Image (tube, rainbow, N blue to C red):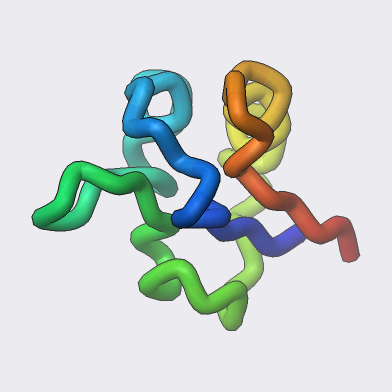
Length: 70
């Protein structure tokens, strides 16, 4: 599984970071991004975070959390 934030869709609601702060954080503009690979989808999400990433995706009001399954 890989993930990223679709930055143009992010409204900085805080859901993804609240659910999975080890994967999602905010840049200097307040927009979320995936911290494990600087939002480039080059790194696989560690297994221990997979369910939280899916929860973040489900709870994003603008569907800005993008997940690509293996």
